Image (tube, rainbow, N blue to C red; front, side, top):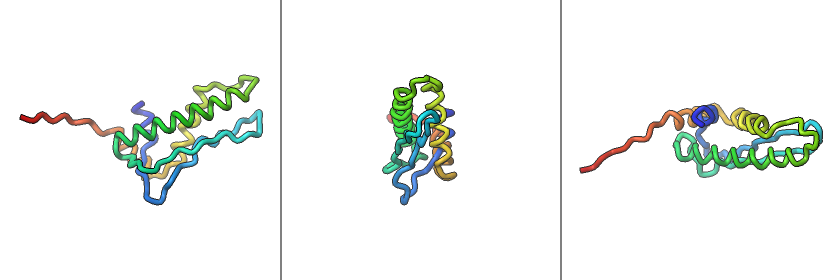
Amino acid sequence: MRKFMTSLAAVATVTLAAVPALGLLQAAHAEDHSATVSLVGLNLSNPAHAAEFAIRVDAAADRVCGDMARTNPSGDFTIAGCKVAARKQVASQLSKTQRQGLRMAARANPVAVAAR
């Protein structure tokens, strides 16, 4: 999970409403299987927000890859491979600043403070 978070580093910008993600085209069929992952309300340099973004990406990948599996009678692809490709595609659509923010979130260590 840490490597996944590191590769998806990002800081949401004010003008960015959503990242179109997972525009995976199935070669056997001319159907467009895609999903949109929203960054609204997320500061991807915040570890909790980065984790929420990862959950959103995984959910979108599950939907798209599941749809592709149902419409792929030849079975010439794997869901695991589809999800890896989806994550790579999401990472490629993030800006450099967003990727840096996610890397910062992945490096953050929780700090416990004791009070007397």
